[in-house]
Length: 170
Image (tube, rainbow, N blue to C red; front, side, top):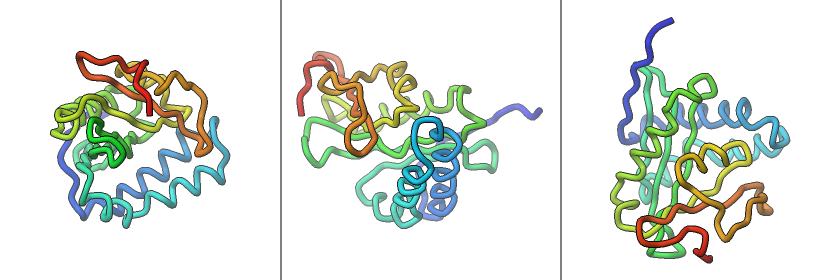
């Protein structure tokens, strides 16, 4: 087996098709035990190539490659609801690369991004499947709510030094 050699770089518009495919595949393979096939197909449709092209104007996306193969991605943007917060989104790692530290590296890059650095906390919507991963990265349940909302996601938050994630409301 060849040794893994991955790099993380900013998203480019030519990544859009491959990113869309990566997300659809990862949703199907990684989240099938927690969600219905129809739900996952609906979510995958949201992550079209056009989604990445459209969101790139307000989101800092990063992609991960193992040599020439795209294996993961993640994004961060300023919260539209609260100027104090940044919002993490579209964090995916191909199933065969999960558990190798790539997701953690993506999170480290996102937490060094200017949007994160200029906010007092970061928020994200986690799948049921990814909750434990985010908890290991220091994220807690927003408002103490650990069950999925009507959209099937669990809201999580990480307060930066000097604030408490468990008391953050809204």
